[in-house]
Length: 262
Image (cartoon, rainbow, N blue to C red; front, side, top):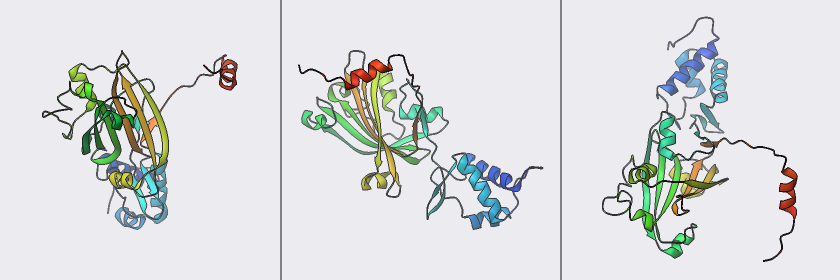
């Protein structure tokens, strides 16, 4: 089979260009298994060595991922977070030129005692969703909203709820209702996915996942949302700047000095 070639360019780079164009045109989408090296050799009429070098180019670019004993897959590019800015999942995905949707797994009300297990000291509503990018599972989000907040948001709570709509965005609901998030505290950890998480995200076990725990507040310190999210490993990246100040010695002293009991 003939393929697009550019003059004065090594054959393996021409193969890499064609594979890259196939990914960009969505011939293969995130999570798809690439044809085998043998199939690609036949398709492009080249040697296995040429195909291997072409694949290595796309692996280095982060467009492909290898899974031992399974094959080469189209990578799921990371959602890139900018330091100091709080953007919702849907906003972040759209800014990267892709399509966000979701699927609701469950939704329910929590008593104060049940909500306390998540770090909320008042009754709340909670919904569990699979977040998708270009129809590919990307993350599991547990979104907890205090009942006092949810009761003023018909799109979230009550007969007019739109939570099950595929294009639903919690932050868009907040914006439309004039609910302003002033700041948020976020913690990120890594662990192995559970069996349930592996099934929902359609990944093999064992696989690493990133845990994102976030509490968002208004300017008065009222809790507006609590998010517990499980992201595919490598699909959530964060940039930040660290500054080494002249006060490092003071910081070290404070960390090691015993505190008196109150």
